Image (tube, rainbow, N blue to C red; front, side, top):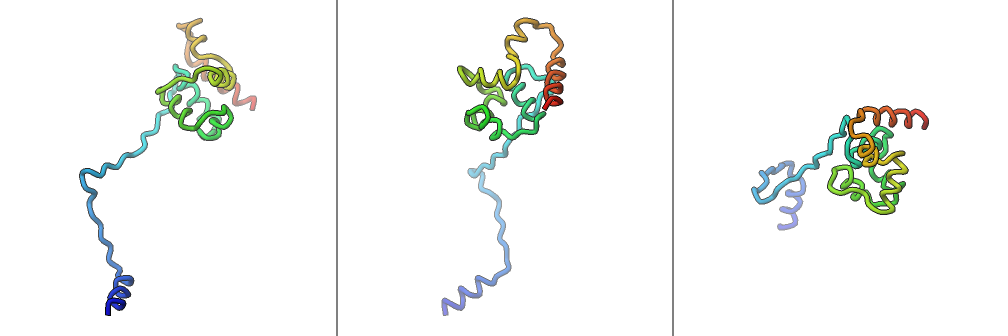
Length: 122
């Protein structure tokens, strides 16, 4: 008799939906918006990566870093340091901090024009 009861339960079409308990939080990923005028090195990395249509894992492989590290740069939690910073500056084509220090009143949209020229050359 118990086997027949199990067979009937397997054919049951009912769906039971319960509300999540208060202690069971659901976190949704919040994407970092792309800055229209990048100012930090992380914003420059994010802007150029999005402009070129690359995924984080693709750029991380190219720069030889972890994808999570690249994400922390783009969200401005950390900045690249040491040898990796040199690879990032080479990929960007300039050092955003030096450029800002040399000419702090420069129009930041010139960076965007430089990116678009670089994309056209690819």
